[in-house]
Image (tube, rainbow, N blue to C red; front, side, top):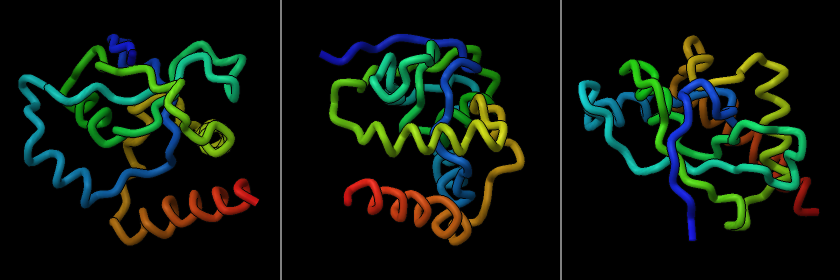
Length: 136
């Protein structure tokens, strides 16, 4: 059973370097800034790939998390997906990239929203390259 809970908005460690401007624009069309409601965001907690990490690692929903930040939310609604078979080695690499770039919370996406083409090239393609190496 998946555990759903709230965490301070500054706690989850992002696992991506950029946000897509197109995705941000589309999500902002339905996101209620006065009363943010969204499905719980998936996080890894205490996963084997992150033995020294106390804070949860955000594995998806970075755009919604950033919108909640822009709305002034103090907390994020998250769900623990640690036991759902996510590629932990890939996420460990992603978190290491984020740490090197100083991305420690969703607030750090300010200045990291890029065009969708740039997002595809700079983020998605990068992840696919690393995933293919890890699969070998």
